[in-house]
Length: 494
Image 1 (cartoon, rainbow, N blue to C red):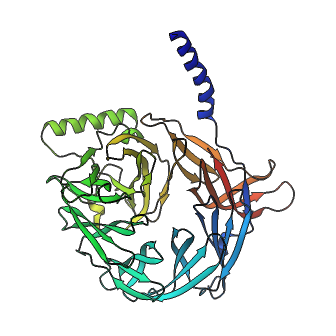
Image 2 (cartoon, rainbow, N blue to C red):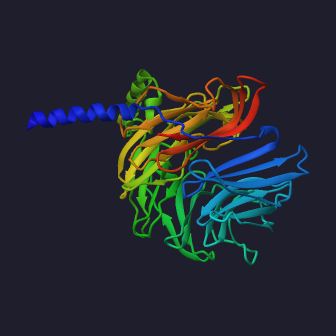
Image 3 (cartoon, rainbow, N blue to C red):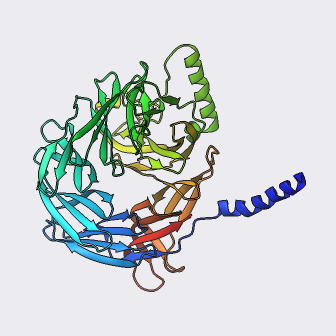
């Protein structure tokens, strides 16, 4: 019997290993005759396994512009297409999907005027309306609950973040109650349609310590509940994502620090209940793979040095700046992704991962570089199940935005991926098992004898099932004739 089980294990290993190592496929490609000099494009995944492609074509002065919205099914076949007569100076900011609609927010040359477009997924009907939001001059976050808009913006007077409720039917705008200290900021905004409420997570700080506050509103903007989240004396709660569900099930999952409130020293989970004063805290040395982006000898040296600091009763010497991703709900719990980044300043080498810059504090960064991305898996109670790391090589942006896409597949696999010119670099996570090998996928063209001459504005988003969508503007050398320029969308199936 034991031999039979052993034989069965070997057979399964031979069958499954090739499947796990198999390179992702690219079964479908769509090309659109668009060029980057005159086109703005956004690709949005819809809940019904389709894609919504918005593109704006305008002249150099933005005096003439066409705004087009097109839906493609899972085979990248056009389902419907329509345009909206929006002011030519309008530019896309953010979107939010509340089935059966997707809402898109646009700003314009007048910083206090915003246009909101509503698209029906099935029919393609387009409605748009312009509103004057006189108290803000920028929009950071945008959620929709039962057709009502919840907007985090920048106060035009003091540049602090504020939360507004907008009823598009009546055009009534009201500022929602919150505490806005000098160091306060919003950490998360989550519309929970099943519970009929919106949860806003605020980080409150006096510059030395910080805590979290959670405010819950109904669809009309009425304050339902207010939570002040306590923490241990030696830990400041910096940022957090909130889980969906009723109050007894909700968790906060985020980062904490101690000395400098700009830098994280670990992750925490905490139940959102009136008597919750304790949570689970995981410093970065407790995580199995957080430091795996380093060379082995450097990681060992770092761990040895930090262990000596702890034995001597000193505070940790490592500090990281982390950009959190939205939580992903899985059948067994939650996934939290984060990107570790550091700033490079003009004329200086100041800024390295894990080291808090001092002289650079009052200077504007020239570039924002990533050292690595991490994913943490938690169960429904907030207990850490595993962590893993994805080393990021040469990933640089000029503003603080997500560079890596994280997706959980129905078969339980977790993948992190990012685009780099004509390639997709990806890592399929096998729970705690760290893989140092870099895996790449070259973007496939229509014809084998064609060659990519370069990709502008590459991107990748999670789509449906085991598929992601990669896209960008591409110059292609043809077998016969001059190079052609297109905007492509490739389906990537893992």
